[in-house]
Image (cartoon, rainbow, N blue to C red; front, side):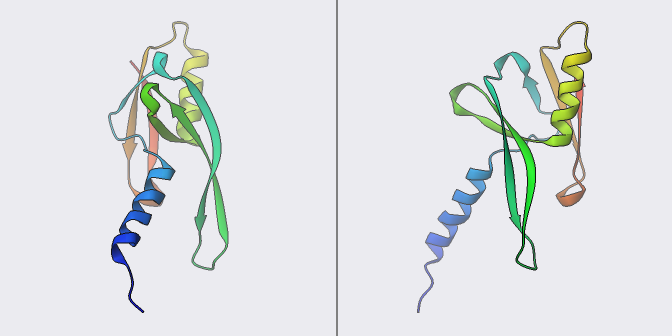
Length: 109
């Protein structure tokens, strides 16, 4: 039996696309452009075969662009938006580390 590697490549792209874009270091979020915030569970299969569900948020922007936002970053952005006397129009995302050790921070501009 022959493996169709082209279909495997397409499948990997489909999986990555379905998970959405993640914010990158120094990305600037235009807060006034967020049309909707959706919450969902991102599922990962562990080495032992069990499924791990991780809560995430999607910020929906015009033209169908969606950014997947981890809960910790969403909490920081929500805190900034609720506590600011003047609502910031932009928030800069700070990303450090990688993989399981990725940390997110938010800075009002």
